Amino acid sequence: MSTPFRWGLLGAGDVARHFGVSAKLLPGHQIAAVASRRRERAEATAAALGGAMALTDFTELVADPSVDAVYVATPAALHCDHVALALEAGKPVLCEKPFTVTADEARELAALAGKTGTFLMEAMWTRFIPAIQALKTRVDAGEIGEPRMFQADLGFAVPYDPSNRFFAPELGGGALLDLGIYPLSLAWYLLGPPEAGQMLVGKANNGVDARASMVLRFPGGALAALSCSFDQRLSNRAVLSGTRGSLALDSPLYAPERITLTRAPELVPSTASGAAAPGTMSRFATQPKLIRLRRRYAPLLRQLLRRERVTQSYPFPGHGYQFEASEVATCVRAGRRESAVMPLDETVAILECLETLRTSGSFGVLDQNVSSLA
Image 1 (cartoon, rainbow, N blue to C red):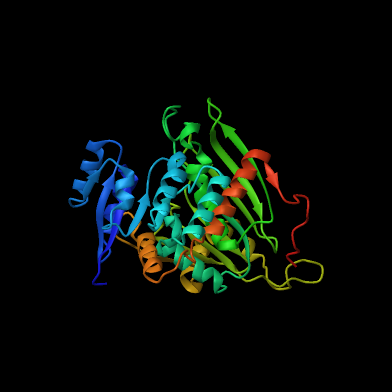
Image 2 (cartoon, rainbow, N blue to C red):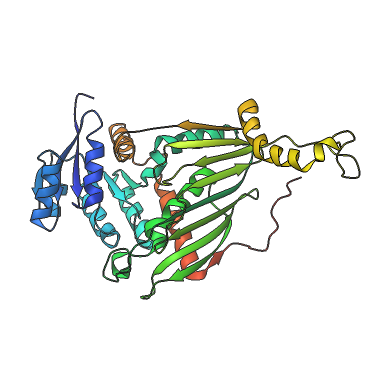
């Protein structure tokens, strides 16, 4: 595009800086202004991003005619006020996750975006990462058959500090909003809205959730097992398994660069009694040494000869925020008010689901049998 797309960053922390660096990788994208309540922080981030304006007045940033869209990267507890400020000024908004700390706030902002006719999107950047887009395409094309199980976790060991935003409830702290939102949103993206779910939570000393695990059931019987943690490092990976194989995302879950396809082995025919078909075993084949060799080398041989396991790479430069930035610019220039990849009603529904699980522990009919696999 010959006309630049100019961003105003509302917030000047590490996430805002990473977003700015990433957005500048896109042709025609510029950082026009950075705002922070602390002058020195705004100036430092603005300088790091190529000399953008440094402001301390958020109202001045959203009113600036040189700003085409606002990226909100302030603490989660402030998102509702800051997004509303930008929307009321008529500025398209990309709001960092978690979108808000309550479902009521999310509904309020969605309604305000509709009232003002202004673009609004949650910055669930993971959905726009090339590997995730490829995963979605491959799943929808039936590469692994019918999805049956999604397993994902995200966890890091964070030193406990009740004043830190990770643990402070007044700042929207807790592992669920900061980390758990990633696997939950990814499961929703791949499998659709769940029909039932249950969650268990382990709490930090001040009562916020330090770790959590949830199980969700989707129409058709697919299940998701999702975990997050602030007091231990988890695998930070995801695997979606189906009737014909599985697709696994490498770490980190939020910005993977590789997908490994593992094809399901063909089922071996059996006799009516359930025993192996005649002639499939012999005394020679049951020798202990041969059994050990087969266990050791058979998987590798299958992989080489049948290509049962294939890894594909989807590399990208920078931090990866440029893909959601590109989506915003595309939507705004096309006059769209929402993104089809991260629509507002889905953002609201995910927060409603998470809030229900946090307060009630479950939703839906939990004792209903899943559909038959036969």
